[in-house]
Amino acid sequence: MTTVILKPHKEESLKRFHPWVFSGAIGRVVLDAAHEAAEPEEGELVCVQSANGETLGVGHWQIGSIAVRILAFGVAELPADYWLQRVRAAYKVRESLGLVSNQNDTFRLIHGEGDFVPGLIVDVYADTAVVQAHSVGIHRCRQEIAEAIVSAVPQVENVYYKSDDTLPFKASIEGDKVGYLKVKGLEVRGLEKEFWSMENGLAFRIDWLRGQKTGFFVDQRENRALVERYAAGREVLNMFCYTGGFSLYALRGGARTVDSVDVSQKAIDLVNINVAKNFPKAKNHTAVAADAFEYLSAQKAQGKTYDLIILDPPAFAKHRDAVKNALRGYQRINAKAIEMIRPGGILFTFSCSQAVDKEAFRLAVFSAAASVGRNVRILHQLHQPQDHPINIYHPEGEYLKGLVLYIE
Ligand code: SAH
Image (tube, rainbow, N blue to C red; front, side, top):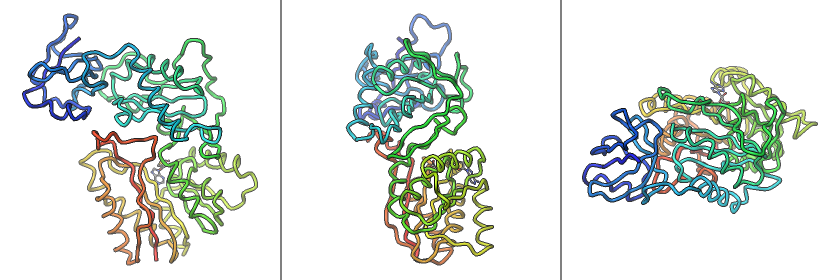
């Protein structure tokens, strides 16, 4: 195996189990005999050593500023059953947290660094696991990963691989980035079959083939449950609703009316399907395909107000250099929403941009409240749920944050 030798004193962060080796920390690379090129191949398994020759761990080589992502610390090679061990451990956590039942068969099984597997995301929807690779190393291991999931998770019978948007853009990649992975002895599901998955007793139609990300936003489950507690008797606006997660909980919580808005017509079609499935008699729900900013301006012009608004926009900042603009975006949308909330109403507001930290987001919402001159109290500070854990040695894993505000 190729060995990556760090510069003197650059082993400290690895000794504290931070899973990334930055290219600037590397002293030299000793390629194994099989190499013709001058560099390791992207996605290759490499062993990392300190300048003194101490073994620090094994990981996937990557081209870019993060040069190695460590899969196992303190060993020179991965155990033969590495994937099975990792998937079993992750499943055990979800099971012990009560996330696996006939009322809830929708959960994130593996959350990258948070489950000590950099670059791998796996979401489970009833009998299907959707696997996403964020590195070429994980892409190369997709078949082994699929087999480990099927052996470790009793409910899973299909594994769909969906990495067209997540693999490094410039990498030369062998094999398909999208498609069902065939695991010995299992039928592959027909592509067009209608598919339902349960979250806290609510049924959701999941379309991993055409949907965003792995097909559903599993990360809002606990925050949706909190909306249910606040919904009774209120007129609710679910902005950036996607397939209507928050809307279904608000309806179950006894909301007087629920309006769901998303710019994507496909998402709105799914919201309607989901509402009809769970609340066939509901007459108090409407779904509109519209741009959020335009919708709020148009509603305001007509004097419309709400008792509870949910704002769950897509990541406004995908990179550090976009943070300033993103904060302006959060401020604008929150100001527009706060203006439309009746006295005594509630705002659930979120940011899923990893690059925008808690404090910066809170400050943007604070500026929004001040700009419209309302008294605002923070009732809850929300974050990502327990199946999206943050590895304590990798604080970069924190991304979802939310505030629940009482608007006077
Ligand atoms: N709240 C959702 C997830 C939201 S993801 C849930 O619980 O599942 C963000 C959503 O914002 C996407 O569905 C995307 O289509 C939508 N979106 C993006 N830009 C938008 C815009 N300008 N106006 C309205 N919706 C937008």
